[in-house]
Image 1 (cartoon, helix red, strand yellow):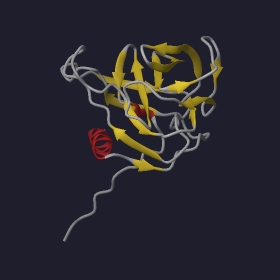
Image 2 (image 1 turned 180 degrees about the vertical axis):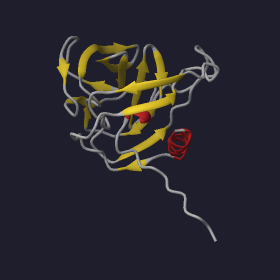
Image 3 (image 1 turned 60 degrees about the vertical axis):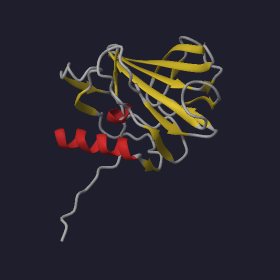
Image 4 (image 1 turned 90 degrees about the vertical axis):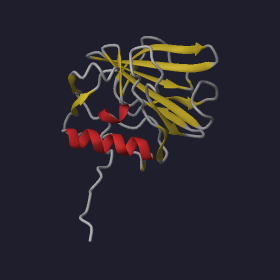
Length: 184
């Protein structure tokens, strides 16, 4: 399991560029990871989802800024991943209910409650959805907008599990695995 976590961490650091993975009827995603916001809280968390998660952008996926766990609950870090997306639709990474849709400071933000303590935040997203609307995995939520803290041409994708930020890449099916080949 540590090898999988290490591979995902390396992929997140070097940037991942893969085709968007379609939603499928594959087996549920189960992740065991050190997902606590604080490295000092090295609790192992098991995440079980009832359906495969998908990328929230429909174009080729580029991680332009990786997840960076803060050293403590209020420390500096990057509590999600920024995905390259100049324009186009933003899609639901999993089924859920809209918990927030609006503007916070200068950023159009959308939050989805997926149940079982999992909450997704996407920004900047221009949407017509309202609090309480149900969404299905892969459903178009809105369009890439401007504003927010993500670099221009990027969508911020954050996930919380019971209030603690986790790396969204841990939930995505279709994240390529690195294969180390022997040298020489």
